[in-house]
Structures are given as C-alpha cells and as structure tokens.
Image 1 (cartoon, rainbow, N blue to C red):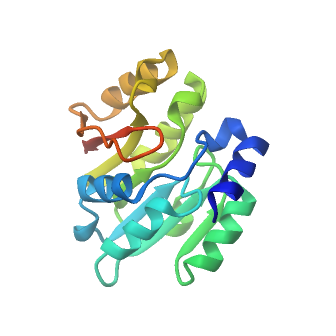
Image 2: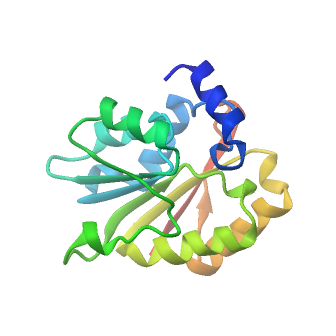
Length: 191
C-alpha cells in the first residue's frame, strides 16, 4: 500500500489507525528480533495495518509456524489477505476476538506483536485489549509493541506503559529507532 493510501485510511479512521505513515523496515526488524519470532510456533499480530511488520514477521517465521493477524480496518484486512496469501487475517477488534476458535488445544501464542496505537486509546480500551489478548500468551512467550518517541510521555501512553508492567512485570524498552516516522522504540515483555 502506498503512503498516500495509508494516509487516506488515517484520515478516515484516525482514532484506530493512529499513524500517518507505515512503520519503517528498520522498526519492523527491531520488533521482530526483540520478540524472537525465529523460534515461534504460533504468532499473533495485532493491528497489522499495511503489513510493514507482517512482512518482517513472515520472513522470520520458521517452517510450520502459524500466523494470525487481527485487523480492525476492513480495507487493510482485504489488502493483507491479497498480499500475504496462505496466512490468516481476521477483520475484528482485538478486545472482542474469540481466540479459542483459532488456538484449538494449543497453549497459546509464543509471540504476540502489536502495531496498535496504544497512546490514542482510552484506559478502558487499553485494558480490554490486554485482558483479552495477554492470557493467550504461552508460558515463556514474548509480547512486543512499540511507542513513538516523545509521544510516550503523553498521559495515555504512560497509562499503557503502567498497564503493560502490571500485566507483564519487567517489560523493557529498546533503543530508539530514528529511521521511522516518527521515531519509535519497542517495548518487550515475557510471560
């Protein structure tokens, strides 16, 4: 998807898209490496958007690894299904998605990566998403998301950081990726 099309989607759905441009390949590699996707058996991606992280995730996944992407935008979901055929994308909200249907008897996801705009979500939505998603993280599994540098000081961003530490104590952050618009860093936590 072009930057222009991404920006149009942002203008239509600015509360849920949360960015004016797709994430850079440098940030995508940073989050994939931090989450240790190369060892995963099951990967969940929240808010794959245009697939900036998805491409890096799929390239890093070992053979036989299962992928699930949950995307709220119907347009993004349609484009992702066409671009990454053979991988599962669901047009749904992360706080309401019924994960039992895709996990079957599996313990959970080894890796959960998020491209969601946490700093734009109210506390109740942040909580609802984490409460629905994090119980699906397998023991020893890793959760990774990112925050925009500077924006991480905003009240809702600080609120999310506190919630993440409450759910997964010991969450850490990476160095800033300056080659992203805007610059960003990765939060990584392990269950």
